[in-house]
Amino acid sequence: MPAYSQAQEQTFSGIVQEAKEYQCPVSGTIGSHVSVKGGPEVIEVHLAPATFLRQYEMVLRPGDKVTITGMKFVFEGKPAMLARTVVDGQYTFTFRNRKGRPEW
Image 1: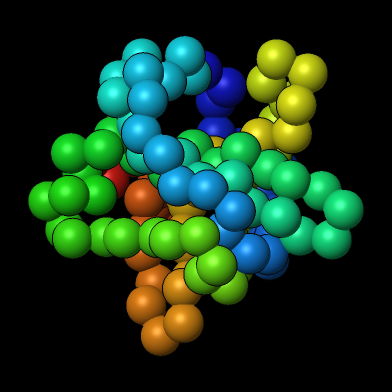
Image 2 (image 1 turned 180 degrees about the horizontal axis):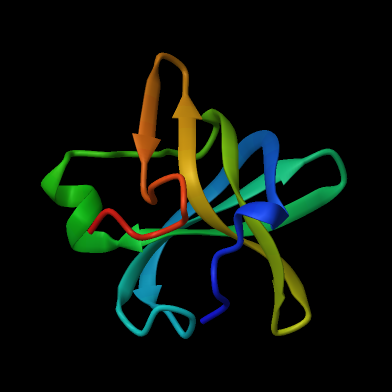
């Protein structure tokens, strides 16, 4: 799993194309992910273990307009991002602290 770097943190906005849970090769757990399209780019965003989202009733759906702050990286030749925060309308979901440490 790539180490989170504050120096590489970026903000990305777009529309959720797909929300899914699967055995994540990055974190090694059943993770929650969203594919977000911003302009021509689609980024696979790694959020947190699925149990963490269910515990706090965090739900992201296709069509949601989101702004994600996190660290971009390339995984298996495709753009990806480790999310620190996701803003969905009036809600801000926090997955990592300011230093990038997971909140779960």
